[in-house]
Amino acid sequence: MKLSALSLACVCALLGACAQAFGDGPFELQDLAIQAPLWLHTAPVHIQVLLEGDADGASFRLAQQVDERTFTTHATGRVLRSPAPPTTAWPATSGVAQEPT
Image (cartoon, rainbow, N blue to C red):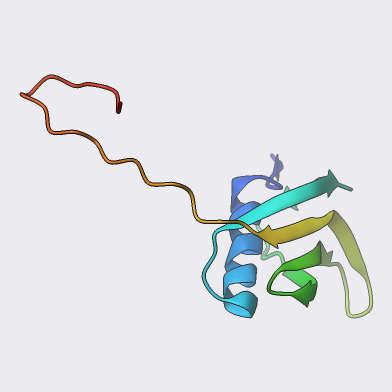
């Protein structure tokens, strides 16, 4: 049985590569194009994340090494540094869950 793994694990690998190259995020993925499924087998799979750009924005390519000279591109797109998400202060309650105001 083969499974397609171009999903959360690959997105995590991509975001991990961005953090190594550009420092801590958060990052935003844009224009994600899945070119081919990434099938998992019992044998190890060698994946490369190629980034071209700078810390404010870069194009990416996620590829699998097939042999010494051949790579299959599985996904392409752009990654941008995203502004930090807003933090919402939750008011103190008397033990009853409430939404922030």
